[in-house]
Image (cartoon, rainbow, N blue to C red):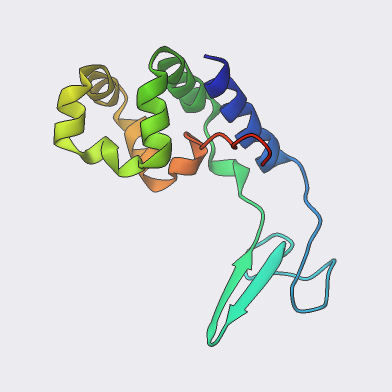
Length: 131
């Protein structure tokens, strides 16, 4: 119960607190990414560049998050399994073994759809001690 609340709080805190920009190209600070926010970092590997930018919290529905959190608190093993492997939400065999999850997704297809698009908004892997 405490773990899923901590996960939700951690996710929300991460999304709402500003982080300093750390660009690997030697220009820290006010660099801009292709998105609408400051660039938090950049990794270049050959012809591939990965740009890290802050998450857009406008698309997070707090009501859906609360509804999922209530389910997750009552089913911590299922929530943890989805945190490690979000594709389980579409696995018929897994849903058969966990009818409460299947019923939840039937009652809340909007949450299942939102979770499929952005699983990190709903489930998070708890850090290991020392991390």
